[in-house]
Length: 333
Image (cartoon, rainbow, N blue to C red; front, side):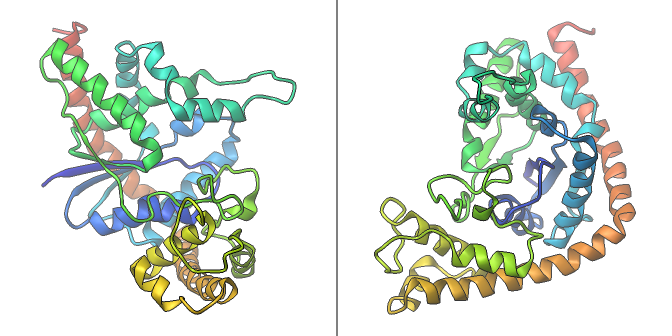
């Protein structure tokens, strides 16, 4: 059976974009692949964080995974920080990566800009710069066939592939070279206020982001106030009509209706009618999710115990891989 690896950072609350871009794909694929899905808590340390909030976010993410349909008997879910090999291999990969490669990462540039203070003082953690080599370690330890990533992570995955190829050439085939698996529909959900940027947990204006634990009234308000355009024509045109195109993508992802079918359905209706119907679809979905989430969060010990058992199994896999790497590069005989 082919394997997939992926993870989500426990920073802030999960968004509708997180669900479409990652978790929905996990659920769809979980019967056909061996899946390693981790809580990327070490990556969450690469930007400013609050310890109590970080821990609660981890619990929220675990409860959300199952509430959204992830089957913990089929998928190997674990905490990244429970596997010591991730950081050990990350250092070795860092030593085989150039500063030029890391400095070219678009996400480093984008996130660094957000950490620049108004007086032009920069407070950029070095972990943000080295983030890609930890991500490479996450992937290469498990010899994954595929990495399920959003379109914005493609550059990081290409770096992972380059590092693996370089080390395979130098040390004789240490790693499997993984292929990207990027969902075609819903891979990138845009902000409701500014449809030219991605919907993100970290966007300053939360009116553009639908969080999975938002109240129904809040969700309805966000959708009804979502930016569209003056055409008042339901059409999918990301360049000229990015706002309505984004809303069509959300509608399609939740109902599994093709976008062309939705355009035909609403061809004689205005934006207000379309938004009203979309709001109902999103609210109904979130109500169902939130009911399951609250049940899980009250029984969170059962889920965390599964993660601990999974960590023990993962340690055996990753320690074997790390031992092979140590021997190949001359750290052990």
